[in-house]
Length: 402
Image (tube, rainbow, N blue to C red; front, side, top):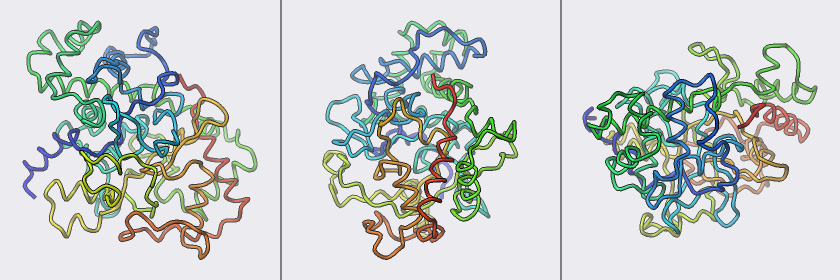
């Protein structure tokens, strides 16, 4: 494929009608306000990134910040699984417009490499569920992802990068932007917009968003701290349940941290979510209920790859980190799982991994059956073993959510 075309597609990634990076959410639980006292550990760029992340003026109309669907108290992902929205997607800045995917977490993504075809693991890296924030333009997929929702008509709905830059230029933190990026930072709109993305990415890499301080992390340092059930869950996670084959539980060689993702792509056979309002978003989804989310393969096709390249990737989605997978602001608060939010509890999705292919299990057909992994689906886990895995997953919640 023509490399210039690939780079152009990466730049235009934020204009895709496919969502999964922002939403209206619930402002009561989005976490720390921009006005909070600056942590002593913050760099100027991280502090600037926080101002940008929580700025509700950076949408059209105003009112929707990045934090609107990346709530700190729910692990920097979608703040609520609203039943009427299928527990998957959120209303953007424009009333009545919904995306189609559950917002992935904005935490713990800083180590994702540039999207590339690995000889051993297949397509690896990039950001968004489909990898369309490739990182090829800036060398930083996380920064490119941060630039996307501002221009997505189903999310923050700004007409172009210049509109966003002008809003930052008029903000109360404009002088901080100049202090970080130079006195001429606003002169070149394209570069200024990239600086916005880089600043947000720096904040998302900060210890406030990605602290690595869960009970699991404590257990690594001390050798204890997990219950017998949680320890069994970890053993199953690494063995019989095959979770660690994608959600790696060993330290990353580059960062020294346990990331619980290998940044690859997989088709788990997740069913369609019939309650997803995107099926009725006819202005952006003319196929209606017949629309199928093709994930990475869909992006590669739009980017101009040959059919032999994108066809094996159709229906595959990025393996998410499992950190904060159970984070919620209060007991009984519902979260959603899977790229489309089909599953409403950890118990449900673990049971799906275990029994997807078991006759009589009752699961609906997969959204896209081709390319579906055979690694899961009939693992033979007992109910007690499923419970142990869920117990272990709950140890991955950060100990101090802002």
